[in-house]
Structures are given as C-alpha cells and as structure tokens.
Image 1 (cartoon, rainbow, N blue to C red):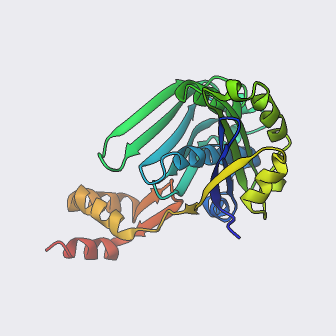
Image 2 (image 1 turned 120 degrees about the vertical axis):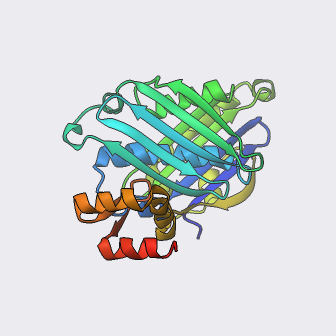
Length: 282
C-alpha cells in the first residue's frame, strides 16, 4: 500500500478539480531527531502538505519551495519539493516563546514566499504575499485564491505521525455545470479527518468522502523524503573557503563544525581531517 502519495482527481460533471496528499513515513523521517514541540510539528506539517500539493501541479517540470517568515516566536517554516516529489523541510523558532498562543500569534506579521524553479530553463519565479488570516490554513487558502485566480478550498492536517492535505479548485465553468456543486463537495470535504487518511488507498478514501460524485482519478504519485548526508559537498565548500580561513576556525574552536539545518545533519572535522582535506588539493 502506498502511504506517501499525492492523488490528483477531477469531478467529471462539476468542473472541480482536486488533489489529496498523505505523508506518513516521509513525514516521520523529516521530523526524526528534531524534537519539535507539538505546535511546530503542526505548522511545519501544514507547510509541507501544501508544498506537495503545489509540487504535484509541477510534477516533472519544476521545484517548489514554500517559505513562511514571521515576526513572532516562529521565525521560519520551509518546505521544499523537487520535480520528482522529493521533500525536505525545517522550522526555526524561539523555543522559550512557544506556549499557548494561536497560530497567528506564533507567526506574528510577515510574509509567505513561493518559489518555482523551472528545471528546463533554470529560471526562478517567486510570489511574495503578506500573511493574511488567523491560521496557517487560512493564510495558504488566501494565497491560493490570489495566485491561482480560482476559488479554492483547503484542508490541512498534521501530527507527529502523519501530514495530509486536501485541495479543491473551482474551475470557471463550474457554476454553469451545477450551481450547487461547489457547496455540495466542500460540505462533504469538511467531514475528512486526519485519521481517515492513514492506511487507506486514496481512491477508497475519495469515494468514501464523495460517494455520489463521478470522479476521474489520475495517476498516483509517490512522495519521498530526500535529504542525504553529503560530506563530499561540505568538503568542497571548505576547500572553497581556503586553507588559511579554515585553519583559523580550527585554531579558534578546536574543530570545524558545519550544520545543515535543512537536513538536520552535522559535519565535524578535527585537525587531522582538515590536514587530509587540503593535502588532497596538491
């Protein structure tokens, strides 16, 4: 059974399209070793689920990076999804200030940035919008309605075991096809719970939520967490700094420590390792 996926679908008679994402193993791997508080897990889970929903629209074409920058205790939420639907992400926050605040209080003021990298041309396209809404879900829904120019319905869920999301978009001809169609499917969508998304095939879940609607279900895309330990890349970076700079760090700190926050990896180099590193340049 595929447990990390994004499923695209279309209501045949309504001109309403949708995407459903569920992450379990990939999401748990992203959280592994980070020790995030429950509120941070929820916020990062929502960010990651939406990032995959956006990435699925660019499958094979581009990389999507979603960043939420705030002035509250939560300073940064980042989720990244490649054209192959490989994900990674992180949160930066002030631990002492994480209490009983609402999501908006945790974020404060700030902005959201969505960056698309076109893999064919190598060009980057970025949208910047202020944080408008009382929850991250509302903030994201507002962004979607502005950027896609379509009425959108968004539900996001996350805990330490799973992250999920459901996105519906009302296409221009929907009301002429069925004036009550949008109200009907969003009403049924409100019944979805996070628990329902686990250990169930997406087609079975969609037909359970929307039992009376005719749906076309497209190819199921697998999602995976991908943030490999890459010491060679770090060594190249240190060589780029130059021997003098690296040895000054070594003299001051006793070792050179490089921290990759995005992947939660740490690279440590003692004097012997640094000596070997620059010997290979000759």
